[in-house]
Amino acid sequence: MITDINRKSRITTLNAKNLNGYWCQYFDYEKDVTLCNLTRDEFLREIAKAKKTEKPFIDSQIIVSKILTNLGNKHTFHRQFNERFPKLHKEQVLGMQLYKVMIDEPDLWIYHPTQHSGHLFQHATYFMTT
Image 1 (cartoon, rainbow, N blue to C red):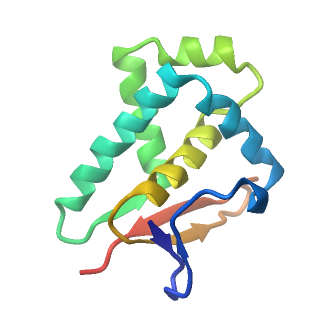
Image 2 (image 1 turned 60 degrees about the vertical axis):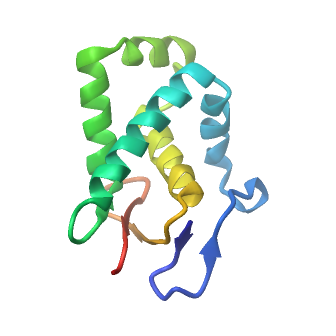
């Protein structure tokens, strides 16, 4: 589950009614069970690694980039994604998937959105306090 930086609200489910319209991209991707499970499993591995560190921290841009690079080296993910979802942006869809995976996490992660200059979409960092 995630909470905001002030720990005032906990998010434990993904409520489609409260999301921006671009989330339909993720919901389309989620229907592709093979690819979606593949990337979800990669996220879960990276989250497990982060939990083993002294100060668990995840930067969505870094983890998404790492997963895409790893999948490019060992899987046909990029080709399959591009064939099945030619109008979607992998990085954005996987960022949304990470958000969903973090909501489903049993541990409480603090979610902090970040908007970089010149970037159309914000990205997020997640961290745990001890």
